[in-house]
Image (cartoon, rainbow, N blue to C red):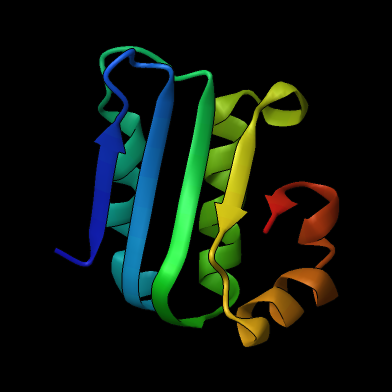
Length: 101
């Protein structure tokens, strides 16, 4: 599976790991990773450690995730992004919407 989701034991944190190309081909798989959970977690972590590429549709998917998680009140973090992916996120001003590390 190219997108994996893991809920912490206490149910408060959802981690979504994206592997390979993060593009429109992962749209449904990415949505399934957070939409079909029994309860909304307090925080969501998107782990891009194994992501090799990110395009504009991936940016849209991150925005949809943020909206689903509560918009401005949400705690959505993007972690382990490569320097190239960080540049894309910064150019798109996503560093103002997400905690990126």
